[in-house]
Image (cartoon, rainbow, N blue to C red; front, side, top):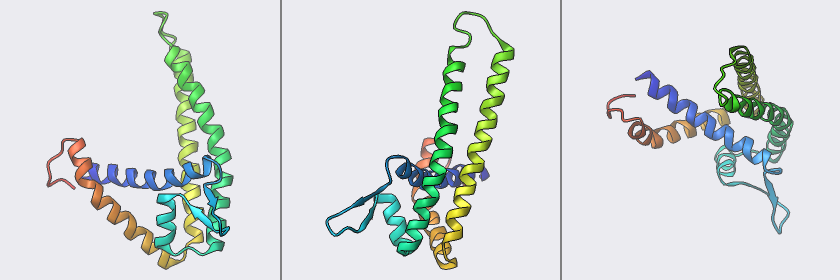
Length: 163
């Protein structure tokens, strides 16, 4: 019961923040139209519109993601290198426990750092929001979670009465 709730919550948070981070990583995430207005990508734009973000808040949030993007890029690059090294281990029929342990420890440390950065980013973004906007965001997350809960249950082959 608690497992599906946790999985769903992590999924929703990852989706919302991941979308925001991905728009920051794929260029600046904004496009100027003919009227020189800021146009956000679809999901981020919908959230921004739902929350009624001011131009100043949009600029602050964009700056937060640009700053965090560089930190995350370096961590992800090192994580990919470790993944490549781990995928090559044992292919010669020899298990190098010391090296695998060292790589696994570094991967765990990188995962920890990525979680810390993600939570730091989230806190920085929430600090920009007004209390009313935070409440609206919570309602948006709840609504999103309710829409996707049946799909998650179906994918995980869980009965309908689990929460």
